[in-house]
Length: 197
Image 1 (tube, one colour):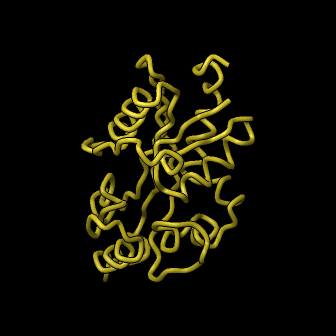
Image 2 (cartoon, helix red, strand yellow):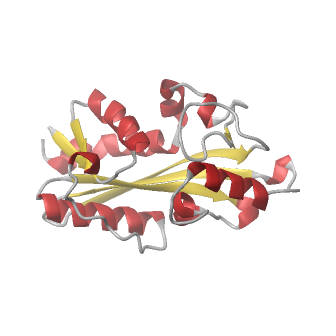
């Protein structure tokens, strides 16, 4: 049983491979299909972007596709960077630049006002046009400096309930509490029924 994941992000692919592998699915991604078209993320919400990516790729491949749109919402920044999380500091999509800009924008903001959450919306689409979406979140706050070498994106700045950053957690620890892990657990309940396997 195969699921194609509509992303070029190797970090996301790794997390989804690990989780979907447990359910008996093999995972391919856009990293395996160099000719696949890139979807323009023109949606204003995580749901809209995830559905755009999933439905376009499902039509292209003629196969069920799972797409993820995820990002960081910081309360002190009115929910920014939100859907612009990957390109917060510019179109070159640099984790280091994004993290530096986030720290700059939060300069002078006290710890108790640095609340934030990671959001992940997973959209599953069939070539027939049928879709399914789920949302998962992970609450935390933004630290004052990066810590940890695991993970990717904003993980080194995102302090979890344990007091460790998401980048200080092992892959297994992160999967238990992460926004993507929470979304996948919701998806698991309907995945087999939706795919008809």
